[in-house]
Image 1 (cartoon, rainbow, N blue to C red):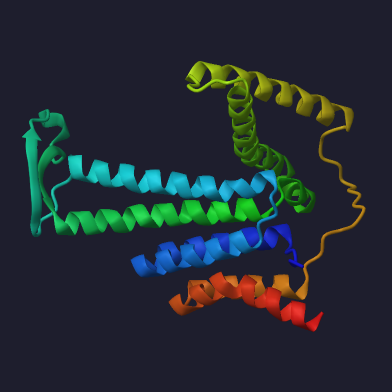
Image 2 (cartoon, rainbow, N blue to C red; image 1 turned 45 degrees about the vertical axis):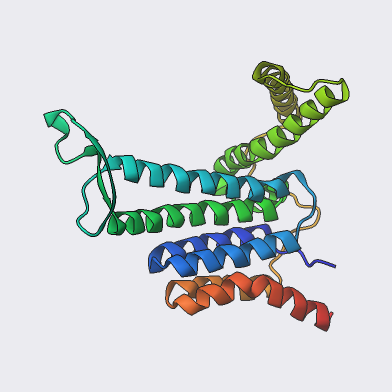
Length: 265
């Protein structure tokens, strides 16, 4: 049985790994951390709507790397070094001097851009991992009152993408069952917008009927508490700011903790 963690534990873990990866600026470290985090996510896949967030974060990360590399090749500031290839130079106005379109592309420029792109992609993937491992409803229950409204907005925002993915798949499947071979954007977009609007109205009605707002007195049927595994993982995550090897240990720690507490249970 998969042992569940506190919702805040996953977010602290992912944010600490993201900060550590950006701080040490190591390409190999970032790639290994992403692989270890991916293994944690797929080993704890609950087949829930929010679990699909990680797959989409991987796709977004790939697009970020591709777009960043394309911009660096086509547009950018000249970086001296070994020229890999040369593109035709397009003249630019004088008021944007220092930025060129085309020209020689050096290996130093490609390596520097690749480091920046992978660092950004790593942060996206790690935050997507936290979102896929945490139920947005459980996260909302444990947020402090000070940031409750911000948490509600964040939970609704992070819930939109998984719900849109599910709706998109359902609409495509309905068209295929009706014998449609080519589905246009209009046939997908209109039902998707209609369903999203209906879901928004249902959410507003539900929040209004339940007295949405901040109350100084909160009631919890079963308070979510931090277990020993949560405390160990948070402590390991906080140590990643000091030593790079600890980042790898913290990334694989959920596997180790799950196995250890399963054996002692």
